[in-house]
Image 1 (cartoon, rainbow, N blue to C red):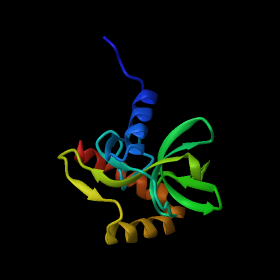
Image 2: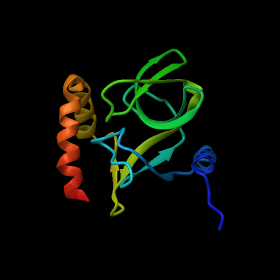
Image 3: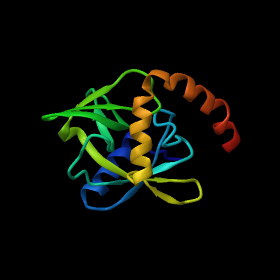
Image 4: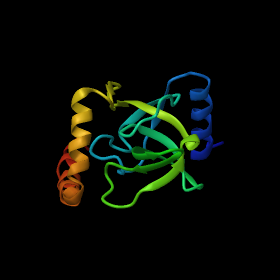
Length: 150
């Protein structure tokens, strides 16, 4: 039986995005909690045009791996990203390393929720301000809500 590596899946998704197609891409891990639940939800990816701070992107970071994280700073061609579920640490890449823009979160039931609806934008701004206490909020979230959803 042939298996496809994560790297091959990512490269295929990027190729399709560059051809102008929308690709639904599974997300792993909890680095984007509470906005994207890895292992349960996916994101719709499109070609990255007019990338801005606050956008969730698929990017090649640190010259070694792809991540789906939020842009927290753009300085010329330099981009700084951080997962919403992270409490410290950022990743760096160049603007040219941003491979795709996430536009929707796709639920397990197949519903496509706009990542940039007014309430999600407000919630992500509030979440950024809560960075000093994210550790405790995320701990409660993981112990309660994620268990309920399982």
